Image (tube, rainbow, N blue to C red; front, side, top):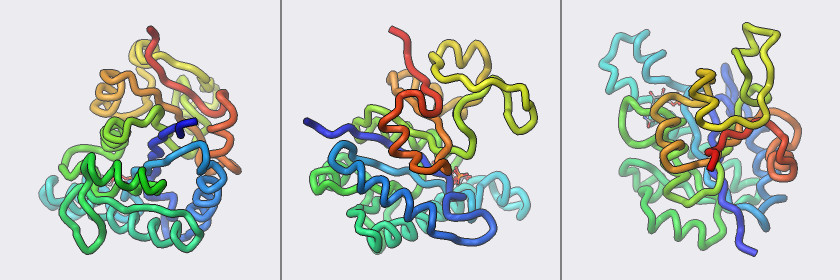
Length: 234
Ligand code: UDP
């Protein structure tokens, strides 16, 4: 049986918001090891715990393109931390970078992706798309397409896709299944517009779920109703 390929998108705050902590990554490493016979994971990690181009760059009044470049470097730092923590906990993984960083890991290409997958390694994609003005969400769809992933799993801190922001609207309803058309009609915020358009064009199925739930990856694998699903209706 061939393994399912999943692209997991994680925010940098998985490493903590005001400090650095490893326990979420250790839990993810253990869950991925439990799923290793069935799933090959690629992970896109953000950098928001260290630097976000628009947010922190604006505070410093630096050129937006420079701010985004620093944000992308933050994703490399997180990726390197993740690589070490995963390795310590027995999860075989390869770190790849969107821009030349030979001391850290090889550049992202079809060749380096397939070679990591052939070695049964989890892939850590760092450096964003390599271009300013894009987002980690867009990067997640891009890398999912490059590794032929069947699904993108967006790990968030809410239970899935809601009719409104659940933080400000307690009456918001959780939607278990949404087509791309419904998401556009209802103006649901799932990913930014560029990421959403790319995912829709290539019929990429997206799962959104709470990554901080116990055994979230196992639940997402075993239970179709865990979180929310965005898909193209034939
Ligand atoms: N970024 C970028 N191009 C990309 C991906 C990311 O310029 O293709 C920059 C952008 O400034 C972003 C920062 O990297 O704010 C860190 O990523 P993000 O904010 O998505 O991290 P997260 O909030 O998911 O941790």
